[in-house]
Length: 377
Image 1 (tube, helix red, strand yellow):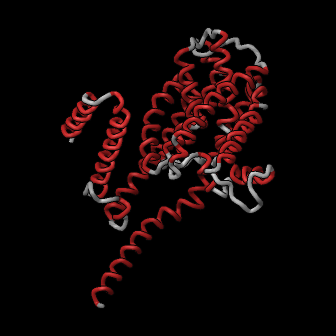
Image 2 (cartoon, rainbow, N blue to C red; image 1 turned 135 degrees about the vertical axis):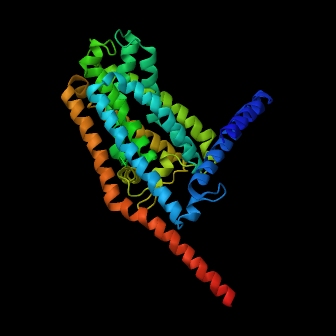
Image 3 (cartoon, rainbow, N blue to C red; image 1 turned 60 degrees about the horizontal axis):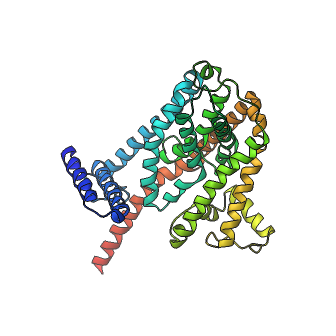
C-alpha cells in the first residue's frame, strides 16, 4: 500500500508539472479530490473490508458496528487526552501551549476541509475565527515577544481584544459543545477558545515574561487599540469575505455558509435574535423566515456581525486590565462548552448513536421482506 501511495504521489506531481499555469488551480483541485477519495476508500477497506462498500450501507453488519464503536471510543479517549494536555500546558508549561496549538491545528483543519468539502460546508473556513487564529500565529512568529515595537504592541492588543471576547463568546452564540469523540466539535471548540487562552497567558503569565516569551511592560489599552485597530482588521476580513460571497458562493445555492446555516437552524439563539431584528427593521414580515440568498439579508447579516463585534469589544478593557476578570470569563466560556457537551451526550447522543444501528437493521429487514413479497407476487 505504501508503494502504491508513493507511485500515485509521483504521478500527481508529474501531472502538475506538465500543465499550463492557468490550469494549475483545477489540477490541484483534482489532486485534492483524488486524495480524498483514496483516503475514503482506505477507510472503507479498514471498516467494511471492501473499498467500494459505503460504511453507512453496512451499519447492520456486526463487524462494522464493532469497528465503528472502537474508533469512536479511541476518538473519545483522544479528545479527553487532548483536553487534559491543553490544561496541563496552560497551567504548568505555558511556553509550549502556542507551539503545540499551531502544530496541531493544521492537521485538524485539513481534516475539516475534506470532511466539510464533501458536505459543501468548506466555505466555513473563511470565517473570521480562522483569520484570527492565523493572525495570532503570524504575530507570534514575526514579533520578538519580549521587545514589542509599536506596531507589534498594537497587533497583540488587537488580537487580544478580538479573541478574548468576540471569538470566544461565539461558543455561546453558536452552541459550540465540547464533544470528545467528535473531531469536528473538538476542532470548533479549540478554534474559538485557544486564541483567547493564548492571549490571556501572554498578557498575564509572568513565567512567559521572565522567559522572554511575552512583553513585560505593555501600555494601557487605549480607545484606538480597543476599537479602531481591531475593527480595521475585522473590516479587511469582511471585505474579503464579501468578495468571495458575491463572486463564488452566490453562484451555487448548495454551498453552506454561516448565514445559510443559521437561517436553517431555527433553534439557535443567534437565529432567533437575527430573525426578530430583521422583522423589526422591516427586512421581512412577521412569521416570514429570513432568506440567506437575499442581498438585503446578506448585507443585514454583515452589519449584524459588525455590531456583534463592537458590542463584545466593550468589556475587553476590563479583561485587559484585570487578570481575574479575564480568567473568570474564560472559565465561564469553557465550562459552558463542557456543559453543552454533557447535555449532548445525555439528551441526544445516547439515543442517536444506538438508533443509527437499529435504523440500518430495520431498513435491511424491511428491504428483505419487500423482496420476499415481490417474489411471492
